Amino acid sequence: MKVLKLLKDVIEGRLEEPVQEGLGFVHPSTLAQGCFLAVARELLGHPKAEPGVRRLRLMQAGNAAHERVMNYVRPFLVAQEVPFLDPEHRIKGRCDGLLFIPKTLSPNDAGFYVLEVKAVSSTSFLELKATGTPRIEHVRQCQIYQWGLANSYELRIQGGLIYYENRDTLEYALFLAPSMDQGFSELLEKLRFVVGLAKEGRLPEGPEYKLPEGHWAHRYCPYLHLCGYGQGVVAQNKGHLSEALRAKIIAQSIVKKAHKKEGRKQKSLEELAEEFGWE
Image (cartoon, rainbow, N blue to C red):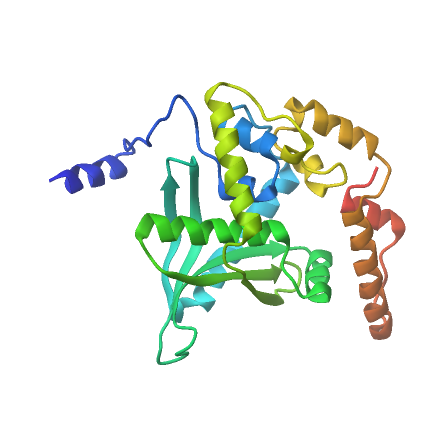
């Protein structure tokens, strides 16, 4: 039976992904970020820079949070690390968790939900609590999983959930991610265009395919060493505060006021600069 061969190939590490004119696959986290220069480079298999020690430790902390959160939601957990693959759009990903809410507990909300888990800093967590909304890139990532699992497994996905955990205090915030919208449709439309360019070995051009100059992700892009545009943006903003960093300062001021009431020691400007990576 073919299913036995498939299982043997998986067990022995010989299962091959469908190849399309030498293209690779893009991960949901890359696509959700909105930089189609990075998307194209991932499709073309351009080399990524090795993550720094701090970045690796943050990734390890994120993995630990995922395992802990899965235990929290165990009563509703159908599966975790659920894979999906879409050869047409060249998307490959793994959803953190697939939940099922039974009618007996919530008749109006019963069904399957995808769960996305994010471990964030205290400052980012305060921003989320203050705005009451999840970050747009995390919404997009959750939407990609909803779309991918629905198509791959022919499931009717009721919605998406984003679980944020403060990695300093283990506080959490839970948001319902909206279903696919116009913005998500535009994301897929751009992706189809970029896939077409990648088949010809080309990168997209035009500002609509790049991150805005003030976007925080430029500094952490794994393709920054290859991207003249990103390098220029980082160099230009060196020593200047982006809107995201200004928001962090505002959030930090909220923390200071709260801590002042409790008599806690405040962070110095030098400590904040180190925390936020200012130069």
